[in-house]
Length: 446
Image (cartoon, rainbow, N blue to C red; front, side, top):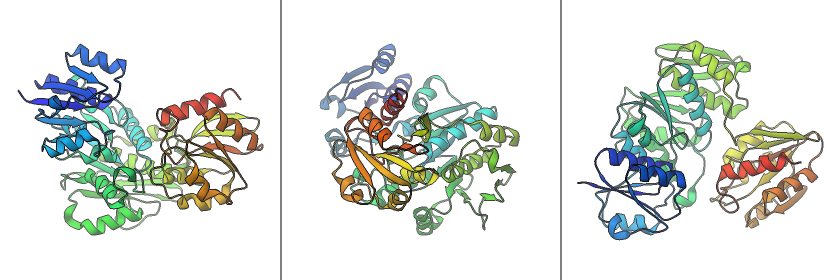
């Protein structure tokens, strides 16, 4: 009997374990941390053996194949040991993909992928398709394949998931943008990160679709370099009409053109606002068009979509000051989009675990729009080194409560307090959701 070891018992790991058990593997789950009660119960209910707070290397190294959680870095000793023993390591998405023939719409990018994934899923639901949501959002793809299969899946893919995908193929691959992010996981080598993102088009054929932002300089450079290596039919989008552009804005009307269907909708009718969300909307509308969703369903879905929690989310208005939760902005480019969309003077809350950030990308917008900065983090030295002297008022905070109260004191009527941290959350919070939830909770008490 083939032995499947699952490293990490979160959403993807527990789901992969259930699928492996159903397929007849000898399954063992190992998590170096603590397993959540809900996942323990799931593993126990399926008779799957597990361990936590340790890795039993003798059992792990006896595996025929290993499914690795995307959160485990390559430098982890357990991964290094597996590679030394030439034991194959794959992602949960790769594993699940072997056991389904469903239509896969896969979305990646440094920024906007969650919004685009959720919007695409929303459109396909409105269009009446049997569709599942997976990857970084929704339920584990492996668990759905095992217990609740769908004809279509919309999957948000991080670079970490793409790293361990080899034979998996996307029917529609969406690449929104590429900007520096997670460079600490890629030896601070931007090309390694770019190569990871472009794995989304591997194995595609001319019968598949590649949807991408035509004006992204890194994507443009890579397409020129890779040439005929990319087999999929291309569906670029841009704010401007141009040769070969399949989605664009013309006279404030969104135009989407695919071989079987053309679609138009006034930009004023779109529920999502801001330039960055126009790109997300174009990618979603193209994917829906390619999936042959009726125009009426696309139009309805684009007009009533409510957005994604922790992404430019209104947290409240207190004393004439607006509070915006953009905790999902865990890199500099994501913060740039948030700043670009703001129309009022700002108090900006930045900080957390730096991932090799270059803050020069937001410098001009900070100088133009931000009069006060609150640095929320354990170590703010890099932020001070870059921003000191460029903004009138700067202060530090070691908790969300302290940060919000200091921001409130700095803000004037008509201002916006924007939490858009540029950084990962793990120095003071469980994750970006915890950070955003704490922000909203404190704002609610003001």
